[in-house]
Amino acid sequence: MLRRTLPLVLAALFIVPALAQDRILSPTPPQRAVNVPATSTYFPERLDWQHKKPEEAGMNAALVNEAVQLAIANDTPGPHDMTQFLTSSFGKEPFFSLIGPIKDRGPASGLITRHGYIVAEWGDPNRADITNSVTKTFLTTVVGLAVQRGLIKDVNDYARDYMPPHVDLFDSPHNQKIKWDHLLRQTSDWQGTLWSRPDWADRPVGATPEEQQNRKLWEPGTHFKYNDVRVNVMALAALQVWRRPVPDVLREEVMNPIGASSTWRWYGYENSWVDLDGHKVQSVSGGGHWGGGMFINSYDMARFGYLFLRNGKWKDRPIVSEKWIQMARTPGSDNKTYGYANWYLNTDRKPLPSAPATAVRFVGNGSNIIYIDWENDIVAVFRWIRNDKALDQVVGKLIESLKTTTTAAAAR
Image (cartoon, rainbow, N blue to C red; front, side):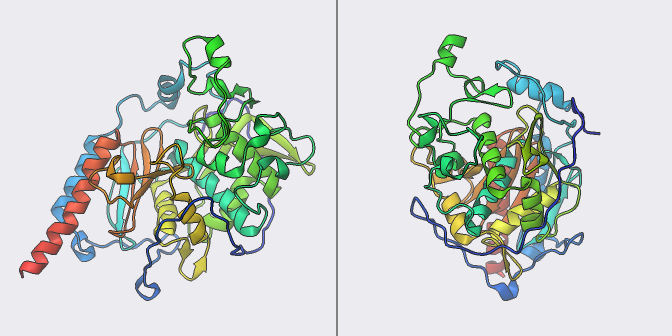
């Protein structure tokens, strides 16, 4: 059961027409997309994801098994009790307390796909666990859908121009300069308090409370700072733009079309309820820092990753604009390994030396990871893997399994 301090209220449901593919303006040069022949592409049906033996997918079974065993052996240390886990992560921060739902985590779990087929799985991949900051990637995708729909004209527009009366997120002189692109890249340096959490209290900079509260203000767009308060600002801004609950948008526009289960849930906080057109609606969080965020199983995470592996299309249906994916994969000016939240890039192969430079991963505390590799046609989900070093070892085995199979085939 999920634990929360106050009961959650169900938000009103609305129906949105089919997504239009509108032009998106990019602030930076896009990366090259990978084209996959539609005639040979497999897409899993809802509740029916086909499996193949590793050899049938061009992989060495022994090395794939070694990769799985490495993932299991590198289970994240620490308590499975999520109260203890989050407290150990963030408990020293000012204002830390749990104000969103939590759930004790499961074992190290995950699955590996190649050419769309499941070739390995372990742990309990059907368990809907808290996924922490992978939630951010779902959120930025919803913002991308707003751009595609024309609800946001350009990511270089000021966010203030899209806010209704009495929503003062961007009214101060400093915050008026914030553009959607800054929010997406975590370079906004938004200043203020949201849902009882001041921006400076999240991963505070400074030795004393006075130094933390009187921190240097950066010009929006010039300085990367990972900050959940500011991501929650983006979530509230997206809610105001869509004028409907953000999880509804995700469900109708993405999760239902890709055949996701009905078990995922996206929560906010006990105090993040707002009045929207006469309805009480919860503004969701961008992660599990103070509880809440996305609770989802490994199969649904893999479907989400597979959508991006296929350049935003599911079967013949375009869902996420290929232009948006290119923008999300473009590094920011102040962090070359980070695109849009939470697109972690493998720039110069520094984060994951064993993976291609074009590979990306969506990462949440724990670690919860969706790994996407266009060059090798792989999507893998890792729940509760120790760190990037362990992930790189696992990915290295997967890449080696492809080379070993290719070498063996050539020798015959």
